[in-house]
Length: 138
Image (cartoon, rainbow, N blue to C red; front, side, top):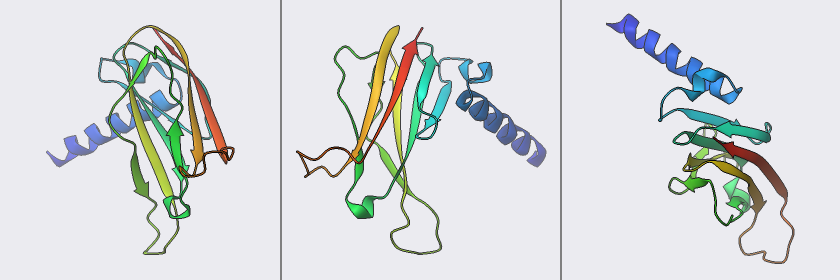
């Protein structure tokens, strides 16, 4: 029984890695997920019903966080609030982490999905970083 648990975990990891690199394995079934990071940027292709998971490096101890720029007539629906996960650093303060955003592809079309890294109280200051993905849903 223990062996099947390991086999199942390896199969899931393979599907997630293939999806992150544009492989067809990540596009099987309605619950399939594609994972992208800040460093990847660029084009993302999804099928209706798929989930897009965006992982962005952040450090909430600085007051900065990521903000999704609103889009009219979006092809993606946000799935809850962004989740912040601190990096494991043996109890060291201020090490930062990653924000995880999830979106579901709800209809066919194209859109830009843009995130800005900013302090929410600084309204007239340019974003410290901007990341944009060009999303196509089929």
